[in-house]
Length: 88
Image 1 (tube, rainbow, N blue to C red):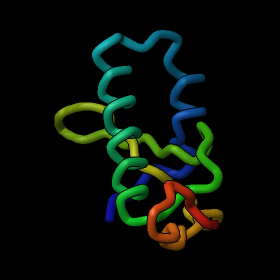
Image 2 (cartoon, rainbow, N blue to C red):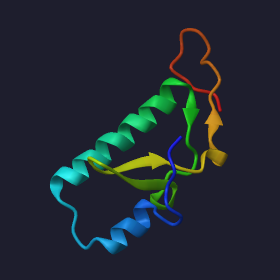
Image 3 (cartoon, rainbow, N blue to C red):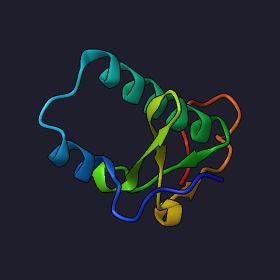
Image 4 (cartoon, helix red, strand yellow):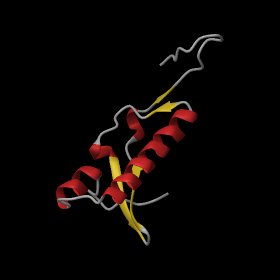
């Protein structure tokens, strides 16, 4: 479990930093896609993905993101055999 400083969301981080280096953008984008992919593989849809629900934390190797507020998430049901449909 990681702690995010109160109010340290991607929304507030973007307001504090007037520019984002391309490499930082790539890190944030990659981590966001990894997190969404992980949830999807577990059959979970976040349900309220927005800048205020993406936390920003600082580690020794720089800034990183994590998903917050999974209260609106939805557990998907298995699709009927032979279909590509997903039931919510």
